[in-house]
Length: 181
Image (cartoon, rainbow, N blue to C red; front, side):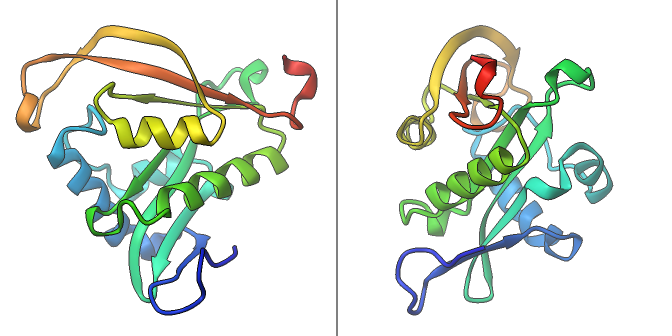
């Protein structure tokens, strides 16, 4: 996968996420969970769970030098054959690297890899106050298709016990599954 903007020090490179990367990936995921703005999960899964639920060919790691600064991955939304071209995705960037275009690089790479594989819809759920993620997704062609009101109650972080809304976003491919609408 290509290097990101600028090839000098601090440049971000993308590559496939592997089991050896899991400790750093898990750490970034844990930071986002603790902040309470990215997921309903209480803790990151173990590698075996992550590995069994995420599509191997759509796991991307972002590195700045030797440091892992972000990751993206896609998971099937259903086991039913008619939904083979629909995936749910996640993009996480460590706090120190936020605002440097890492999320954009990851999301663009994920869109590219999924379209090459014939996936026609990427979807995600985002908390309404996660304005940075919403702006990133909108800039990359995602649209809000619905608001899920009081969809679940937070069990961790600063909003423990509060019912939360999420926005459902999707991006339809212009090339993969072109007859999908």
